[in-house]
Image (cartoon, rainbow, N blue to C red; front, side):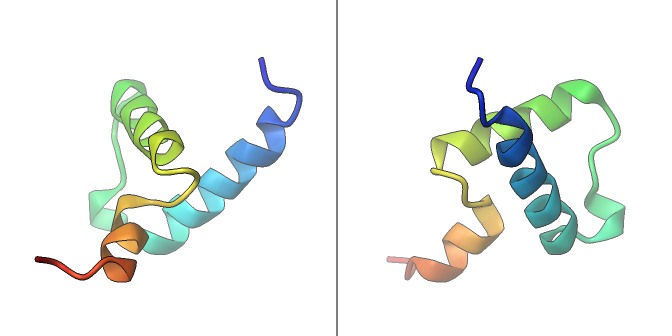
Length: 57
Protein backbone atom coordinates (compact mmCIF):
# COMPACT_ATOMS: atom_id res chain seq x y z
CA UNK A 1 0.00 0.00 0.00
CA UNK A 2 1.16 3.52 -0.77
CA UNK A 3 2.85 5.04 2.32
CA UNK A 4 0.89 8.25 1.70
CA UNK A 5 -2.52 6.57 1.73
CA UNK A 6 -3.68 8.56 4.76
CA UNK A 7 -2.87 11.87 3.07
CA UNK A 8 -4.53 10.72 -0.15
CA UNK A 9 -7.63 9.56 1.71
CA UNK A 10 -7.81 12.83 3.60
CA UNK A 11 -7.60 14.81 0.34
CA UNK A 12 -10.29 12.64 -1.24
CA UNK A 13 -12.62 12.92 1.73
CA UNK A 14 -12.27 16.71 1.98
CA UNK A 15 -12.92 17.15 -1.73
CA UNK A 16 -15.79 14.64 -1.73
CA UNK A 17 -17.56 16.26 1.19
CA UNK A 18 -17.06 19.80 -0.08
CA UNK A 19 -18.27 19.09 -3.64
CA UNK A 20 -21.18 16.74 -2.94
CA UNK A 21 -24.61 17.83 -1.78
CA UNK A 22 -25.66 16.01 1.37
CA UNK A 23 -28.52 14.25 -0.39
CA UNK A 24 -26.04 12.67 -2.85
CA UNK A 25 -23.57 11.28 -0.33
CA UNK A 26 -23.10 7.52 -0.69
CA UNK A 27 -24.94 5.18 1.62
CA UNK A 28 -22.80 2.09 1.23
CA UNK A 29 -19.15 1.13 1.40
CA UNK A 30 -19.30 -0.28 -2.14
CA UNK A 31 -20.45 3.06 -3.58
CA UNK A 32 -17.76 4.88 -1.61
CA UNK A 33 -15.12 2.48 -2.99
CA UNK A 34 -16.40 3.21 -6.50
CA UNK A 35 -16.06 6.95 -5.87
CA UNK A 36 -12.50 6.48 -4.56
CA UNK A 37 -11.62 4.36 -7.61
CA UNK A 38 -13.01 7.03 -9.95
CA UNK A 39 -11.14 9.73 -8.02
CA UNK A 40 -7.86 7.82 -8.36
CA UNK A 41 -8.35 7.29 -12.09
CA UNK A 42 -8.82 11.04 -12.50
CA UNK A 43 -5.54 11.76 -10.73
CA UNK A 44 -7.04 13.03 -7.49
CA UNK A 45 -9.76 15.19 -9.02
CA UNK A 46 -13.43 14.49 -8.44
CA UNK A 47 -15.77 14.00 -11.38
CA UNK A 48 -17.66 17.18 -10.52
CA UNK A 49 -14.53 19.35 -10.54
CA UNK A 50 -13.12 17.61 -13.61
CA UNK A 51 -16.26 18.42 -15.61
CA UNK A 52 -15.96 22.08 -14.63
CA UNK A 53 -12.40 22.25 -15.98
CA UNK A 54 -13.13 20.48 -19.28
CA UNK A 55 -15.37 22.10 -21.86
CA UNK A 56 -18.09 19.77 -23.12
CA UNK A 57 -17.91 19.05 -26.82
